[in-house]
Image (tube, rainbow, N blue to C red; front, side, top):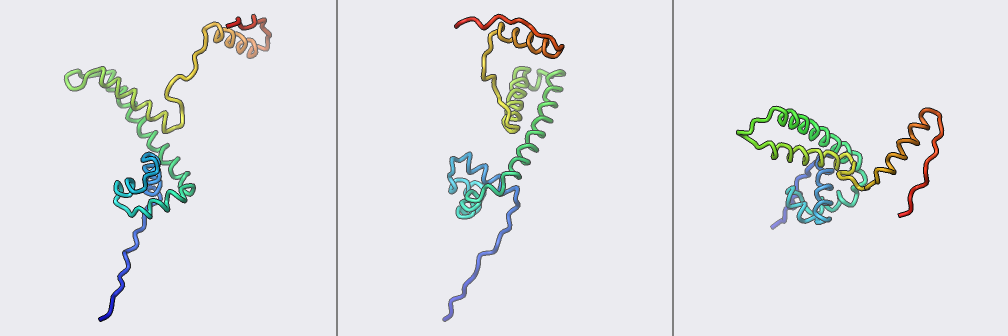
Length: 149
């Protein structure tokens, strides 16, 4: 009686899939088992890809940029839809809400902030604009020092 050894077939994965799996694993808080089940690939494969994820950074950036461009296209279509809205199918508020979500996701994918993170007093903005205008005109401007808080 002889034992026959059979090797598992070798699967070749695209670089794009590897980048998507790595990103999904990061979104799963590093859970390689859950990610492997999600993509129906061996957990050891996911682990190795994550371990060497630096090789896929450029692909991931390009993929995110492509997705951001596609979302921007959808946002533009949504804007057109809002301008000539047909309230019998979707409410105006739902269209505007979906537009906000699309823009938010596009900003995230492009690495831009999705909210205003700083409040500036109107007087400070006015002073900054005066100084910038004077500098552009080659002039100087006397500005009162900022008031004490």
